Length: 345
Ligand code: KG4
Ligand code: ZN
Image (cartoon, rainbow, N blue to C red; front, top):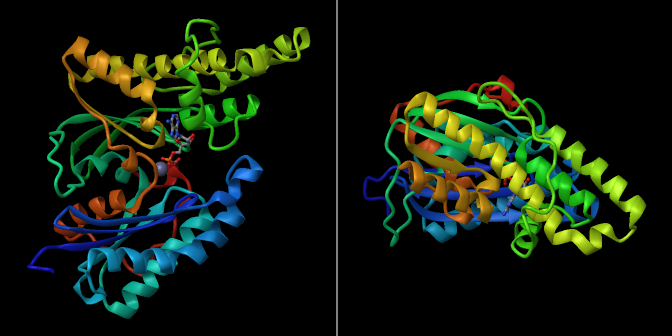
């Protein structure tokens, strides 16, 4: 199996997905995920329940990834695990498991910043599927449930944050809008689906005016809240009657905010290679906006396969692979880092 290839076992447990993956020289052998449905009934992730579910899932998920990839533990060259950012209780399960496994199997460990994983997911090589990869430097639009950033990437492990949200993440804005419209959790995919049937120009919400390349999404969320409150006073069935148009309009405004800053970043840096990553990069309207803006402005755009947009261990393993090549390992004292601000990209 091994044939002198570098085998990386990746482990991801930063939020509500437990995942393990195996890469051989960057080629994907297995990517196993266990999502946690338990949070749906609460309309959001409950940290204690997430942590408990990770504890139940992690051993079966890692065993299954090794089994599917036909790799024995003594063939693994390094264990890459998500050190942060994320929910502390969730991160503790993944980091503790990685440490125990590394110690017992006598394998080195590589700590991985989850956000680097989202960005480098474009470099995961999938057997039987030839796709071009971005070259350096490129700009990454990182859009997830916890983060919204524009990052300049000069090399596999050389990241500079050019702009970021000063309040909510864009995925959070999708999820909160979905909650107001009673669409369930997570709301992003539902809004994406309903918006396809709606008129994006029907309603307009307050747009932020934030200098530089930073973002803000809390104002537009409040604008939707007040608009719904006033409209429901006049017609209690307002949401039901206008659901698709509300989704399409709110989604359009979120995408306009993202695209405005992305265009600005390409203007400021002169970089024309654009990479999208994170859960919201699955959004069909955002993908279409990046593609059409790219055609207009002569960008090379890289949109991740849908299975690599949401949290997965293959993206953790690919960062692990590049760190392994540079001999960057960590010790058993690597404690989880919950806050993004405390964990430099
Ligand atoms: O990257 P991710 O799985 O977890 C974090 O690292 O946060 O992103 C999850 C976020 C959620 O807010 C979810 O609503 C959003 O990604 N999302 C979407 C879509 N699919 C997932 N948002 C908009 N449209 C989608 N199709
Ligand atoms: Zn994520």
